Length: 294
Image (cartoon, rainbow, N blue to C red; front, top):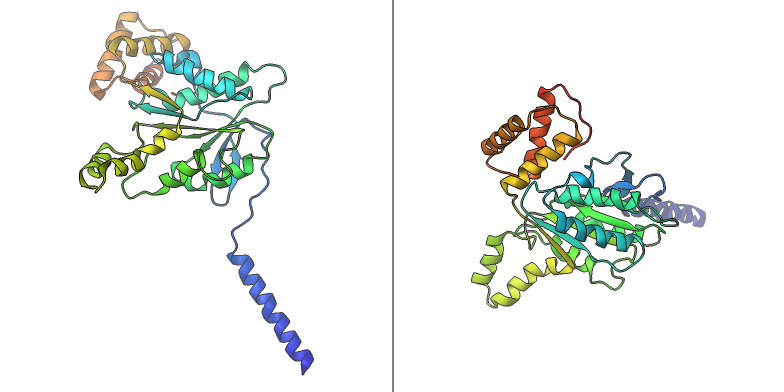
């Protein structure tokens, strides 16, 4: 009888252990950061997927953003050398090369790194995976490499509270941000929140100042703010002619100018993205293959 009860208890405990194991979150697989310089973070299951070839343009092709280009490059170069650097928020007009600049700076820093410097690693995290950022940073903390975590088109809506966890990760918390990690984000919004959301808080809150401060303080976690503004016609044409020369597209200058302006007019916008889209159309009409993207 005693033996039977003991066997039943052991079987019950085994079933409980199996159930608890199934409920436990999956362990984070070991990551290999040696095989590539760029990765994409996937939250479920947590893993880093290497990117053999990054979709980027050369730094020299990014026109009309000289000041912010130099600032971001200097910040990233200092970080790659082990010196203090800031998290960066690239905000402003659509299509003006915010994400392209991050990728171009990463490539430029690695191409010009000094003897003995480890390659800088770039990790893209998707907006919907922001809440898993603490898990990613825990993985990277013990790694000997230095990492720029990059989130493209980061913004938050009125019913989204995940910005609070991002605030804590960037500057707060008992551990703080790892010394070998920087966070770069691009956004069309300066404060990462829609303007009507901030205005509504200011109009309806009992203490408007505190309510607005809570909403906009996330952007204060970025020590480097880089603004991107709509380009002029001359800057737009400079982009077009720069792309055309780089890709060796045979087209008369007057024709190129006229068609580029017509292209921008039909789309109601002048930007680096518009210039690249025009160049793609032109290259297709000329039967010219191109490599890469804007």
